[in-house]
Length: 442
Image (cartoon, rainbow, N blue to C red; front, side, top):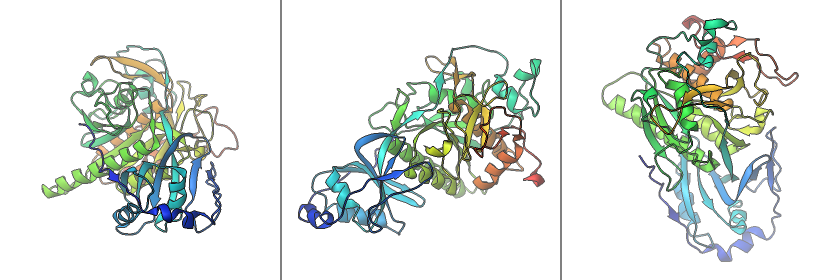
């Protein structure tokens, strides 16, 4: 279905006369957010203006985040509607612990908003990209090597390298939200378990015009190419057909996921079910450091949805990127068939785990049987998302909260086998493993 655009609030004007009073004595200094989360500000009384040090900034477009008080969003918008010096369209954002809005504003309006008491900080919107590198298309009838690798503790050889051991019901009853370019939901590999959830970019189509999201979804839940072969995958389109989008659309995609998870929970409870509604998320995308995006994915975790997120493909410290640097999701780097850290994979203390991410075969677009082989941390991440879905579907783990589910995946991982981890970077040498430890070992 097409995402219903949030109510657009047209903000009209009375603040023209007040702008000089708000800004005349306040020097403007841009805030820089770097990988160490260090901020610069001109005054403790002014809301910080944050720019990603390594981001592709969208000029004139901002995300305004408000302080955490009850009813602050509607109250603020009503107040500001009488303050702005020109018409402006804004799209609200509402997540647990995160309220604000996105819009295009001139510099003098941003300067005025920084002096409004309800504003916590303002962040310049930026471009985000799918974290994959395109490879050569291939067709293969036995299990992709990535599946063969994650179910063996020792490095598999011969036929073992393409033998995937799993439980037939892995993923059953679990919804995996794929925040990406969309999904080719008619692909045979999904066996009817893929559906369209939301299209976030305004005026875009309910199709995957890129293929990246379909490939990711196939690794999570495909019958031939997936880890959790009974999971449902839901397309949350935030990137356009060129594989790029805006940070604010990604945040709104996460907002949709949280609301949908909550609606499913309410419907289940209203129907008399006492079982936990089981959801996980996958974001094989990234951009420069973003405080807003990190807060959003952390808010999803707090609401009951653990995301697997890509570490990034720049051979740099993942702590310099978002959502890779967020505290609460599980951040995934990539390895090759030889258990070597892929040369492109980011690393560092923010990288929680590694998984196969080089020359990965999965579903594709163009027909309902198409396949392609891609490389990237985008391909590693859905291996871990699939493991999360598989674990959550098992009776002994079905009531796990995100904190315990993340801990279980890390506990299950194979330690110390990966070659090429940069020294002195505090990178954990953990390779994803698809069979969990016993319940008592969590």
